[in-house]
Image 1 (tube, helix red, strand yellow):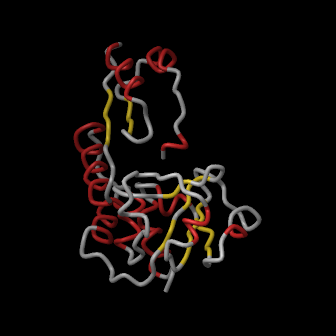
Image 2 (cartoon, rainbow, N blue to C red):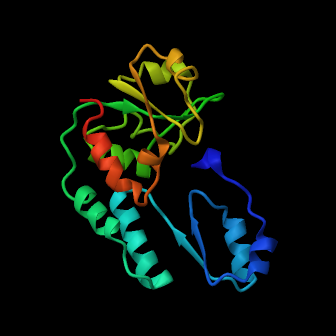
Length: 195
């Protein structure tokens, strides 16, 4: 996510002479991708805004970039997540940062994942992908539950829930923000959340 960007040492990467560098548009700066490419390094960039696109990208990565056999979890994730979304059962808000407060907004993998699990994001129609809002706006947005992940900001029982009158739930950020093998576990976890 935007709050978690790190600036890579492109000179060190170039010195390693990798076959390919795997990047993501949201997590990596265009400048760094350009520098690597100008140095002759092959760079693969994924653009992930939905669960089906994430799975498509992982298939492309294994098939065309790495040329490795697809792992079993990938087929399972496609089966679990790329069908019809679950009926909505609870509206959620997902802060990802504090001081200032930032939430998951429109066109994000996390928002699509949650909507497919029957947990639509109350900020899905905001203009920004990660709007900065005051806590009163988040608390008053009509969510049934505020999900507090442990990344990129590490919300804990003592840091986050106290800010809200809306019920909160601490969740593993890996289960709602990562688009890899955790998608299988996320499906099981999210089926029972907010119900």
